[in-house]
Image (tube, rainbow, N blue to C red; front, side):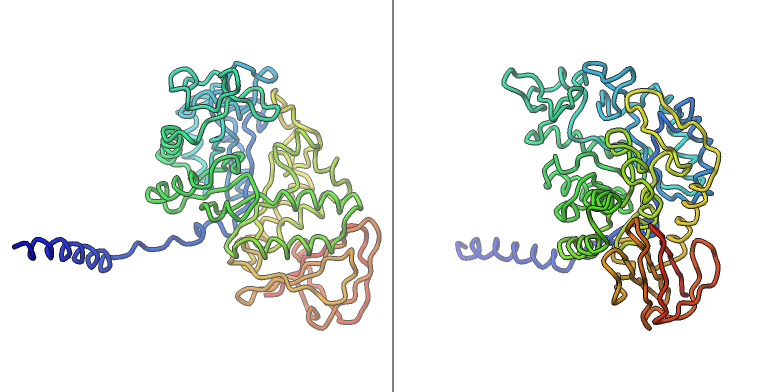
Length: 451
């Protein structure tokens, strides 16, 4: 009997192991949602999108954005803004008082739900700005929850980071905070949103993101997750895309004559050696931070602004971003804490530019983001200020030729890029003759297609 009592637990344990081994394994999730690979992201600043600054008015902009070729609408935070420590008259979107409510400045929850429904009907995916690092100092949690929900300073008050005097930092050593913040994402997924842009993602622990996304993907395997941050660790955490901040500042240096095309190549090689092949890198010449605090792309990049915008559409693993107003060449800084809408939405040459660049992305598999697109194969013999490369996938080949300088530059095509191409920006047939030198004008670029 004693021997039987000893053997039975072992047999039960063995049976459990065998049952686990024989059970159907969960299907691995694709690296990204299928709809993300050729997508163009549009950052919608609801406050400045229309004179009214409401969801109802923004809804009227959807046909324009559909015609432009936008795929993902990223809404800056839509929640009520705190009053304690408020900056300006309207405050920062990122000082959130209630994660489950809608800022009355924009309308009601019903207005948001209608906007989301209409956006989906137009074929957009909609992602919300998710601010997990902090709340406003007068959020209900500050007084309703235990003190350990917040990081505290030496006086016991909720801690303030940097010069963000209108926020209170959450404490991720507290398990209840983690649970509450995952529940926030579940709430909005329940409303039908398609993913999140996660503010200052590097400020939260990696294991929070890993656990949160594992849980969320059991609800919706197709959610898209964008980190405002850089680092391969964020992709290991489960993010689909990360910001290419370093590229932005490098493009600014090139535009101002401090760096060259050689440095762009160096950055590509560096990030591809560190990041997974599946990583999507969000590439941009502006966003809400850059526009309001560092200046417009025209201030920072001058005559190179258009060239750099085009570059964000063709670099390996990249996913392009358009910020509110860029599609009409908006050339001033938005007052971040005030109502300061785009002066005119009259289509112009910038609208035409972005429409063509968006079509370029959609029509050419070689330019897909993450692991789906082709690698950059550099044309031999290009001078230091010229970035010349091809990308090829599934028989689709794109030849990119960029003069990244304020001076004319010579180009001598090699046999590898010879032949007939279609100019993506003009639709004209172009014959590239190997060995035949031509001059690229300052900041001139050509994007040529061979199918």
